[in-house]
Length: 475
Image (cartoon, rainbow, N blue to C red; front, side, top):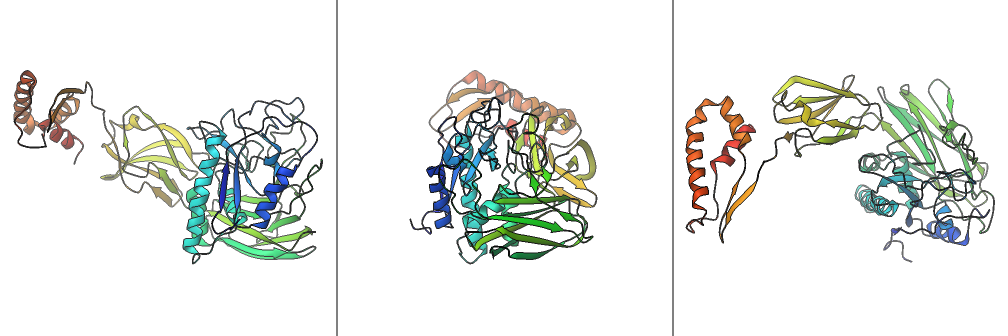
């Protein structure tokens, strides 16, 4: 294999429920060996579509049902699925891994199954690979680096921090790109009993600080029934007030009472990734210490990622979209604050919406409910204190045509007819159009009664109806 030719392989396949006590197979080792031997290469794998099963979780349904021992590898992506509403699907397979590690690693859109979600992840990975090359003079990024970027910038879902249902959350390509563009990545090596110390400056008004360390681990011994981690690193974060923070850790015991518990801060000795997050961090200099607790196969590169969640960005609708009144649209963006609809021609006219509780907002709201209160061209504004985010440009809310009919169609022209709801609306507010309206009624009746093709003089047949409707939009 030539790593400069192949950087990612997608595998949308599963092997059903896995029984027995084996936690790591020869297939797992083969995957890890490929990623370890070719640092710029990775594999994305579907988590499985049996989220309600109990497979290797004893009699506990809904947990421990990742489909296949190959997916127990440490250095690949195992991808769960979200639906069109942005929530986890019921069929998406859950972790933990058989030795207690966090799986899936990430979730991505996949209404049709996790076999659809994993190529979505692979596509974003490929774009980020290209973005890294663009911003780093053509250098090919190590796969572990991009995996770290994707996990640390994901939209947190369900329980705060990582969990056994969604891993580190839903992929956020925009935020991942920003980390690459800003160079918020530190690469270093670490040996047995060594310590690496790094400094992070956090400005004021940051909503959340995320720090993640990841390393591509050496393959474990196939056939083992214990944990697969070989090199064990440990991270601690210290804030300007000398307060220390450990990574988020989950309880891996197959116990229905604890599997869905939120992560707690503790020492992690199972995973080759550790993440620390702090909400509303105090401004100042933070210190990250990474210790080589057990490194029999080293030194190996470690990737330290920093993500400062401070900006507010509206990703949908960002402008140019066309919506229909009463139609429900999902508003997306990176924020945790109050949502407002605004009229671009009178920025002081605002209609408060619902408060967005998630750090990455994904809320359903009926955009059309504001149709009578605002002009048809609108924006979305999100505000947190003095920080404001807006749609890039306006989107429109406009009634659909009713009773659309094809009257006739000829070689060089066609005639369509529809109910003139919007023309009547223009009439009610613009008396100067009365004459045009009367002429249009006469013209329409003449055209409809003729029901024949016109002489071939032009390829365009402009109806006054269309022109008047455009005036109703305020064009």
